[in-house]
Length: 407
Image (cartoon, rainbow, N blue to C red):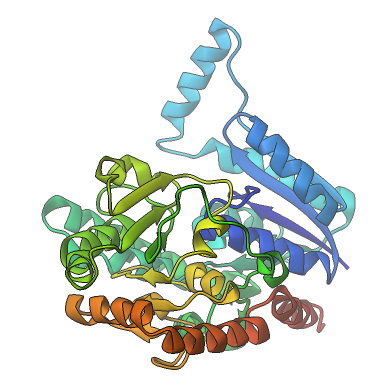
């Protein structure tokens, strides 16, 4: 069986959850079918794109990259400018990408097209389905995107609040459209699957395709970075604009939680790790705070910290932060929403807290009570290994492909 997997997000080493989601999806699918990959990179090719290609070629029969060409002369620059203006009214990239994909499907005689990050690819999905109605399409989602957007509403105001509301409602309309249009819509958790089934005329088209990790890649515990301090707290993610979920969560930690932790133990060190973390918080580097920015791997920090935290207030999907910390035997504190979609039990696998005092006390408890920390880490590690490995995703992929080929 042949499947064409296409995605606008692809990167190795994975810089965050979106890249990790795609990487492990490809690993699982490559074990269930003959897989071709088309990476819709958009931007001109870079060393990063080339290195990514070298890694993913081993998981695919054919690997292709679609990029925008760099204008080389004045006429090309004028055409590029005209095209950018035109794209405000009609996205010409969609027709170009669709033509390339459809030719590949025809040449390779492939009848299943799998959209990684399908929830940001609806216009392309719609266009291709209009050209090939019988083509079987999988819209692979990383979250309920409308929830991802609308959950920010309580944390913003003014014109931004109106813009978020409009964007969220637009995404809700797209979600209702694609669950009917696509042969399968995947969900990363039972929570997300319940939402999609609630808006689908045919709930059987909604299938679980979980967020997982390659647990084998977390078996080795690297040495801590030079100068690493304990006891420590670890917060990782992909940081963005000032109102992004990660930036909002980090400010909440810094303003309302971390001062309470320091009052109990002035020696605690707070590590803020991940892409663009240094942009918003690098100025805070000091005796009790280290902001690293982007790292090739977070494991030297994660594997040697005392407690990992997931203080998210809004977003949707499931947290690779919990999966990774669990795989590394690191105890966790999370908000209720931060643990959404993962069947963890408060006090058994992790500690869950939503108020600043409770969150700070949970961190202090893990740092001070080594027996509690070991218990949480061991139980969470067992849960992740048994239910959130690539092998789990292979089984789910087999069920999806069996469903698509039932006729």
